[in-house]
Length: 150
Image (cartoon, rainbow, N blue to C red; front, side, top):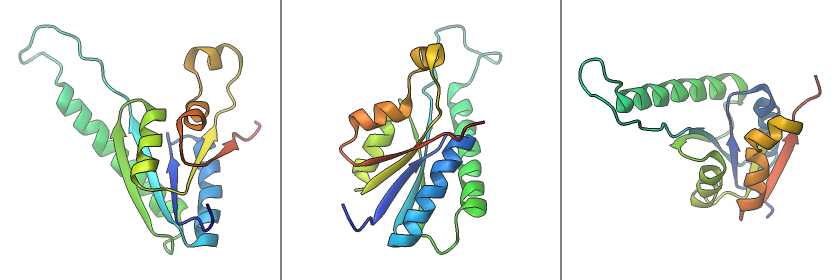
């Protein structure tokens, strides 16, 4: 595993994910690693219905979501990652945990650094945990960073 040459940091643009970014940046600086910043867009359900001028344009909406995510990733890279760290940004669509693990494998990452949101009880039961799923699915080592206590 050492040295760590490539790190994948998935983000949902939440404060807990920025805590994980701090750890990813520290590791990237220490090992001169490439930092791949990953955001996964949800799959939009397509509902059959009438088409025409009042219909919802799914592809246009997805395009706008991708542009917005790209802008947010660029902002994070410009404000939270030192310029000396080599980075690349990746936007995918699908199930977050599966896409994160696939991306890490494709990028030949040595480590995934991901945050946990600290959800418990019914929220954890209903929404599950992307970080938990990544740990179970990944063939790449995963470093989980717990959400800070409020």
